[in-house]
Amino acid sequence: MKPCTFGSLFSGGGLVDLGAVAAGLQPRWAIEIDPAVAGVFRANHNTPLIEGDVAAIDPNDLDPVEVLWASPPCQAFSQARNQSLPQRTDADLGLHILRYTAVLRPRLVVVENVPAYQHSDQLAQIVAGLWEQSYFVCHQLLNASWFGTPQTRHRLILRAFRGSLVPELRTSAAKAGWWSAVADLADSFPPSQLAPWQLKKLFPLEHFLGEANTLIRGCGPNQRGPWTVGAGRSAPTVIACADKITLRAWLVDGQFNGSPDQRDRPPTVRRGDEPAYTITSSGALRPARACLDGRVVALTTRALARFQDLPDTYQLPANKTLACKVIGNGVPVRMAAAILRGMA
Image (tube, rainbow, N blue to C red):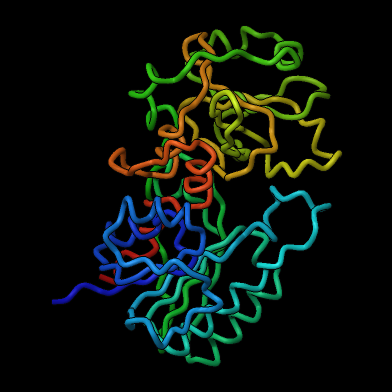
């Protein structure tokens, strides 16, 4: 029996393609416009990659696939985006998905994006277009931690089956803590230190420095007091970033977009048995560190990759900014595999 074929649009570094392989699918092609990101894809996949614009490529030139995955640019809809910035010109790229489905007619179409995408005109047009093409459509908000990913990552997932009802998606995996995902890397974490404003605002300091294995998130300079996140509380968001000195994980309660109303957020502490926070490719926030047995350290790109379920065999670029971009814009491998499993 031949494996189910798979193609991806806006493929990035190919994290979702790893999920497809884990689910038993056979990737046939991928499309990515960014040359640097495409280079990372090629370093990790043998799948033919078309380096180009999804809007300019003719789907008639592609081999048909049974499963099509699309993760159109999310920056125009992300809460992590500063709303004072000019309107992005790539906000409507997702509508080109309908050109591909009309020609390729895959059995399953998956569209992934940030939660705010559910309220967009683009999603409404995609849903209407898929219905016109005889697809049954279901879209829902999912958390990657429900599938065993050691990260809280809420995403809008649309699934559309051609000519058949959309089956239930099982999310039965136990939640994984961030510490167990990176504990063996601890010796490689470079020493760091808390910023003066963190030392001033995180009182009493022993509350978290004396407790082994916690993540501290950074926020604006005008904090009003400490705030800890205990078991059972919803996770804030992690934004991965690179600065000129070292790479660190940035932890923020929700998406931080630089607006004044978000600058007074207090620092938080995240226990090691809780999932990490949403990793993005932003570089606008203050660095967060991990506190391990009283030591303050910075997280490495490999640690961030683990939060996205990437195996250590995945070749990360030496450029930390590019590495964060690939990791932060990707789909957690376990989540992708769970969504696609059953199609093989």
